[in-house]
Image (tube, rainbow, N blue to C red; front, side):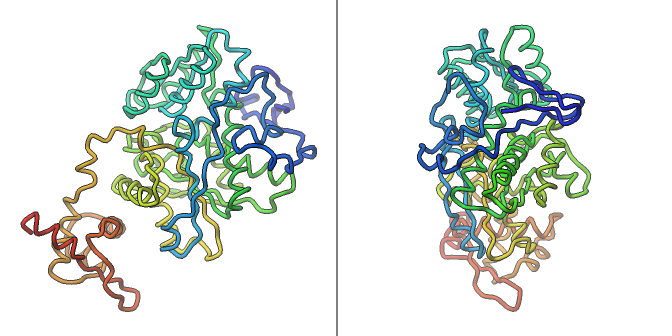
Length: 443
């Protein structure tokens, strides 16, 4: 492994800063010496690809990586080959276990007093588990806006919890100061590039199983997006991949510092229900943009009202994902509707984290029907209608696209169904289940 500054050419070893000369450092390997035939003789997981990972004195592992790739039923409905990379199957339920196994293994000799991480939840829960495995203390700096399930994990593994600031942006410098003051090894992705090497193994696994043409990635800090890009770039350097898959970043309309720049719209940095994506000033923004532009990809913005739909449609695939992962489904639907994909494309969706990490005390209400959806059911109880006609009849200040999403969700719940088509118009009507549902409400 070589760590070189692209600006001045300086080589680094041991403790590696994230930047030099104002530019991110680059970690490289002896690509000509990599024999990928060795991979097939090893167990699945992050360390299967050790020729392309930092050398470590001791591997600290909980059997992370090697997560399943599932063909999506939704893809069959859309007419595309769609595959779901289910990172909820990692030891602590998120893709961050890939980062932490490498960062902790590499940092163990430098962590006499323990480890620290700034995180919006998943990396903190992961560090808590892996540090417990080493017997070293773990300090987790997390924002005040964080899901209860992640806090439960951190507490269960015995890590020291520090709540600071509204978003993870404010926690990064706090963790850096804590690392310096207490002599801790800092594994925060924005402060330590080593861990990102673990995340790139998602690309290696996708290449082995799917050979995707497009990869749709939930994007907060941009670290996972860039890591996957680096993984595919290294496969090209080795000579086993001819063309880079197009990488598609997905952010919410309320917090869109990366996607907005790609799409040329005004960015917003407000709290979102997808708390895992709430990063106001991503330090890795330029690297994320490099991944999108370098792969010929794009970005998609998802509304708050589309998060439940994404979660429900993933649940129909047998996967319970947190909101921050659920954005990939409405993003797929939007791109498919716009004709972005070709019929022979292979599209990979990255589910980054489990829904069990969230707090769903309101789940009964979330999975019930009210508001606009109830209005749509009442309209369809009178006669069959198509989307634009429903939008006009609602007389509400909402976009036509929002009506389409409501129709998709009602259809997935079995309350409405497509009855017929006239040209490009798709007509909907109530199912028997939908009629009985209205009857129970006195509708």
